[in-house]
Image (tube, rainbow, N blue to C red; front, side, top):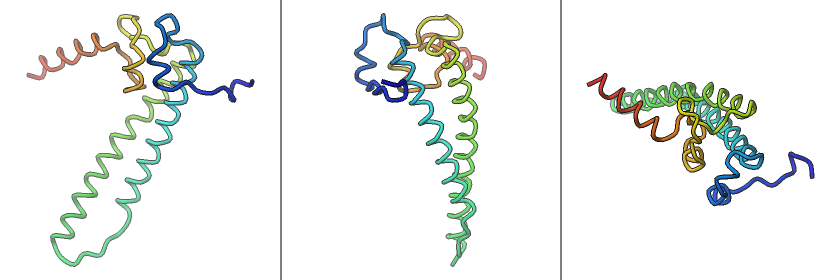
Length: 141
């Protein structure tokens, strides 16, 4: 069976797998597919948001105009946020293809499949991420 014809593992199979199988070929293929789907869906959301901004509306009153301006502002925020995600997905795919995916940038410990399923672009294990967020909060406060 060719590599592209292999059936992808399900999330349940990934979660149930023993730790000794962490980031084996099947899991890497699962996450590569998940990241590629995330990239495509992100591009689609950007296009949808852009189209909603570009589509001219007829305004019968000031309330309609204000509502439309608010919807455009929301769409712009979506586009901005989603466009920042695209390079992160591409960077994560490069890491995966280089064999460095799934391990914390700081500690080198496994990030964990549950965390990666929830956030495929995660770069840090939960403990390190929590420490970083705590430090950020202290410096802002």
